[in-house]
Length: 311
Image 1: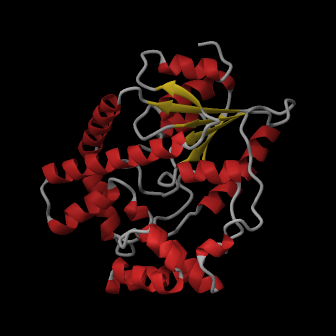
Image 2: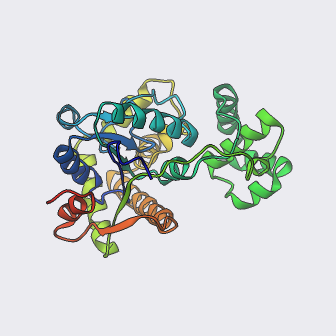
């Protein structure tokens, strides 16, 4: 736990569309906190609609960090997030303000809370070469290459699991060692927040309805135009981590194939539901969290009370 003489650090996690952003804004305004985003998509500039990025007005009311820090051509890792978050926690507390860690990228929370294996850092040149190869020969071929050098990791990955195949191959090429060889070696030290709150639905149907409503709002708000503009830049492709984000991948493919809007909606909603399912699975593996039913009528008030603030 953090020193009681320092302002508190409160983590607020939950699946997509669970109401994290609204609850975080309400809490931040009550306690004069700053928000550190725990979201692998919000780091990218020019990706606003499909990420449900906080509005300019919201960011003017409450300082937000780790938003719009990278171009979509760039990659961001759990290790980079943990380092950035630790730095920001120190800076915000030095200003005498509480810190709210808010988001749904559970790997980032895990990296911050538990520390990381001492693996090689990301290598942009090697990663770009792997992406280029994937464009030429496909991810199953790179999965086969990984199986020759790191059969244990390859056995756990699907042949089209681009993001994990890329990282495992990157580690193999940079270090000459399989990624599993680094497990259990010296880890970076983890950081424990003062409170870890998790918004989770009692009814999965409630969350599914929210997901569909939000995806419809993104389509109405211009998601296809946003992705069309990103495609027209000419320096992005479907294999980049930014373009593999849920919603963006489906919109990119729809523009590529000319799929009708109804098909895009169906695929986008289904992919977002799958993301929420994975997020909830991650959360169930984190026993330290305090669960708040996000579909309860007073969910936001419960968040405030759990954070030590009278609703």
